[in-house]
Length: 71
Image 1 (cartoon, rainbow, N blue to C red):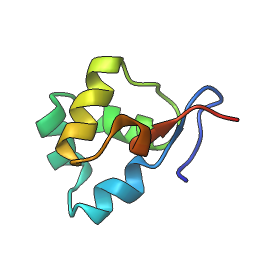
Image 2: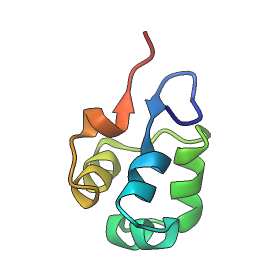
Image 3: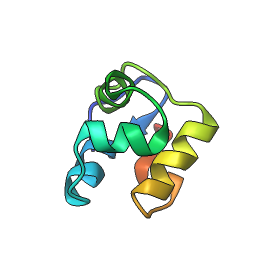
Image 4: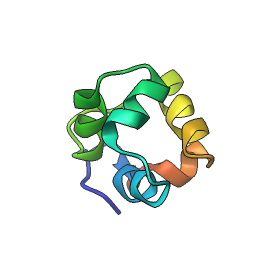
């Protein structure tokens, strides 16, 4: 599990790296800045629903595989 925001956990960095994507390539596909992808990976920023869906689509996985609510 990646670094955590208090309201949302994520596996973004691991999934992105497994897909062979840089932050820059993922950001281009999702239509956001590389800084935004970095902020999500580091638990600083919670993405919108639309952005979470774009990220999951790019990584060919479900939103729940990328993002989880804390227990």
